[in-house]
View 1 (tube, rainbow, N blue to C red):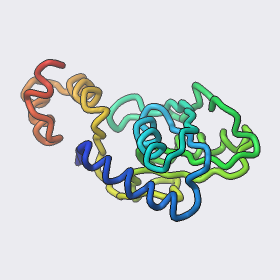
View 2 (view 1 turned 60 degrees about the vertical axis):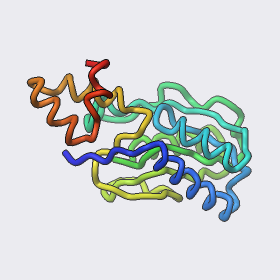
View 3 (view 1 turned 90 degrees about the horizontal axis):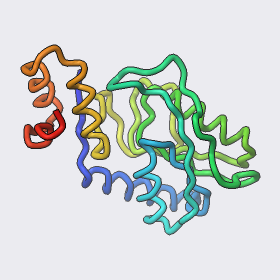
View 4 (view 1 turned 60 degrees about the horizontal axis):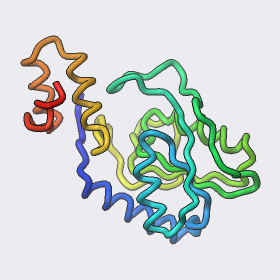
Length: 183
């Protein structure tokens, strides 16, 4: 598997670029809904950059582990907050398969959102869902800064030996100092 490990500086750059596009297209006053867990940090950063404190969440469960999904994504915590007849900016970290975004957007529409615009930091070329706005594209497995420990634990579980685990950590770009306290 090919990996792309992003830094906090990468995230800051992506959120700034996305925020500029959001403002340019007139979406800055939309209610922001971040998909937990991956969309929480970008939603919060973007809300600060566009000076919009109307941030809500929706929880969609789909991924079980690195590259492993359930059969179908499902809403386990519906959107909180009033979105009836409101314009909504749905934010997530990546449109990978696109399945979670499809389910989340449909849920927001069913809850009465007037319009739903979808923004992600990244997208995969094979995604089933094309976000309205995104910054970068990759076919690699993306490791966001907020999921490094989770990635270490998941790779450790799937490794057959310490040697295999350490090779994978090197491939990912995770240093021994980062994983030594976790495993």
